[in-house]
Length: 135
Image (cartoon, rainbow, N blue to C red):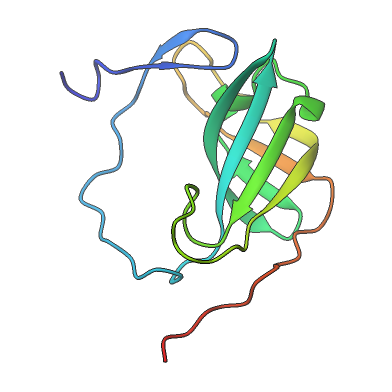
């Protein structure tokens, strides 16, 4: 099976063919790039997870297929220092509510084109931890 055959399911329950994923990336040193975000979407008692990026103190960027048809009040963003599943020995995570969502006007949910959404967080992200340095 290749990347074009993989199916993704959005919170709206639609199956989408995934576009090719990024490849040939390089590993990073832990804490080299701060703030890994996990978008938590709740719909009809089910929870969906999507990735997101912190692009400002109160703004996150994610995929529109993760927010399409979902009210902002049913979304939260979990902000992590390095990885979303913990285990890195640092408790720097916080959960922020989503105040408002802005999906790109030209988002096409059938072709997954222009699959971009901005999330305004309900409060400014105030880091609970500062950059860590090796001793």
